[in-house]
Image 1 (tube, rainbow, N blue to C red):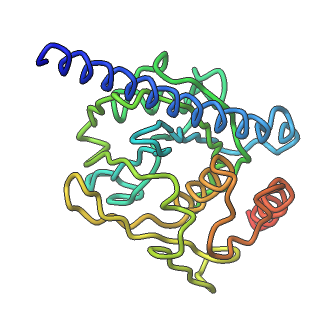
Image 2: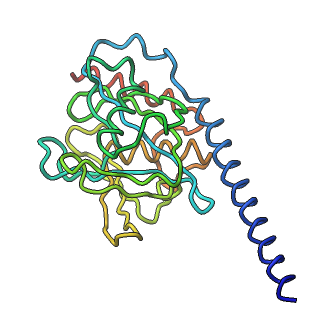
Length: 246
């Protein structure tokens, strides 16, 4: 009887693991297929030469939900100290393209090896508050990745369920902010692992919302100002408005 029970338990565990793996792969495959449709290719190759930067938006599946990784920048940094950001930074002369910049910066900041990232797409470039042309690179990583933050650049690394960024509950919107075209979006997220509350705002909040809406194929519960089915038009207009003010 005991042997039969053991076999039943092992069979149940194997079946559960197979089901979880299948769900994970399905979620990932659907997100990859959707996001690839928005890869910019050479659509913005006409832009003038500007100081460039890239960020990596790392995605993974955990407990049947898509998640992303964010970092808290060190208080010792000269710019954006103590702010929540995706891993990323300025383009080096040795970087071949925007993807290489994003992968190099992610390795330097959180110890993510470039060959452990499945690059999916590069989304629409945006101009940061410092006048950098920022290219968001989206890639999948393993759920088991264990970040090793570079203390001179990063104070913390934390995971956020992607659907958090399309819910109204913890979202705040502010209009009329100096230097900001349109609405400034922000979120307050409490990390269940550490209990720390993080303020996610500005460019990082906008990119997180964009990727969440695209990958999940769900319209945010709040007004984002763009059609998530065809966001290219909105981001082109936003980019040209900011370029005209430089």
